Length: 212
Image 1 (cartoon, helix red, strand yellow):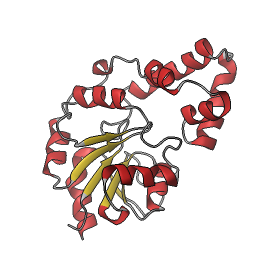
Image 2 (image 1 turned 120 degrees about the vertical axis):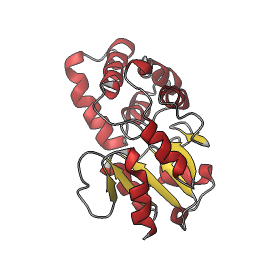
Image 3 (image 1 turned 180 degrees about the vertical axis):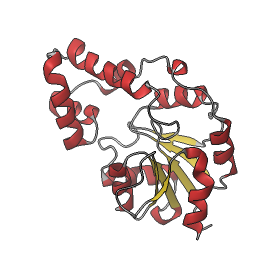
Image 4 (image 1 turned 135 degrees about the horizontal axis):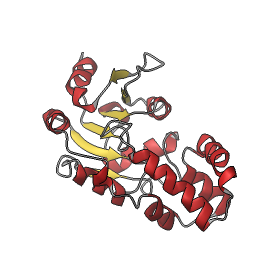
């Protein structure tokens, strides 16, 4: 296999979507914007959508327009009892350990949240590093600059890297640099540019396709 590095997104990729964790985080974002920033609850959903669309994440939009304290924001929105939502999946652990590449997490969240999630999933020892939102400042996925910084942090060239994410938008940003991409989502990709697997436990099948 010509690849050396496997970069894996965290939320809704390392575990399947729909368990309520992201909804809990989204609720904390709404609370932060209301309690810490004074936005009326009724205006928050549209503002969040606009910021996410324009800047990639709500945090990047709030930082650019309102100069929020990034560390305070990240600590607040990720103050979630993740073990109430997550449980280890031996199939995922086995699939990752069978992958002969160096494995790193690449997330728009922060390391503290990533480490809690990995611990809850019994995957802390599976990944060599976590590349988080602070490592790619002032960018974030799906910005091309974010992937360039992540590659530098991972010590990998684009052509040597495979990136897994649940978001087609994020994968498009990676493809722009020549990174091989795998969509991990119950829904097939809108474009045949990506290898598709419905669950991270299906990683061996994706690797086989990319090797062929």
